[in-house]
Length: 197
Image (cartoon, rainbow, N blue to C red; front, side, top):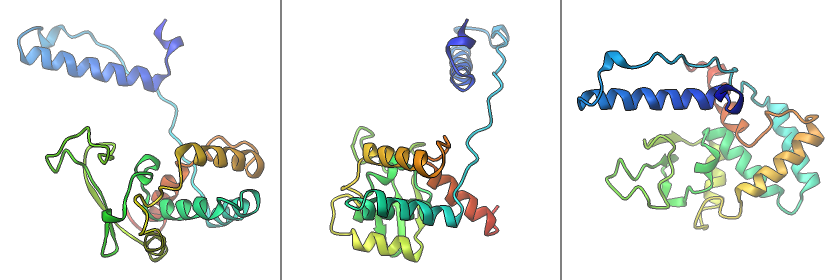
């Protein structure tokens, strides 16, 4: 039974792909649209809703300072920059100084610029470029790291995951939602709390 082997989210992605393929095949005259089987989407659990309060952000920074003094400045720069921009973790690891101009970060899509999508600099999830205004503290971090080939070239996803796992266990009693991605949720939550729709 597929429902036992896959999560509802995985099944729903496959159902959606099937629906798209059927519609495309119907446009080509290969199948009749009205013959498409009815496949119901699975009920999914609510997504992660956790974000960091300012005091939790400060507690994580202090934890990194104490537990990992050799890399704390990297981890704290990344956390601050990620919270203030809402950038995805994967995107944050490939941004470069040339993506930052006049207080604005441009997260680029090579496809939108008509360039090779296999280019290693292609890094948006949905293939759309976007512009993010930088806060003063994010701008300070970008300026300080402006001589590097990548803004966070001294950081890997493995390092982030390792240190966030340790932090989660020691500071948050194993709370599963304390991951690097929580910085993106924190940015969105703070924008909403500040009055954005």
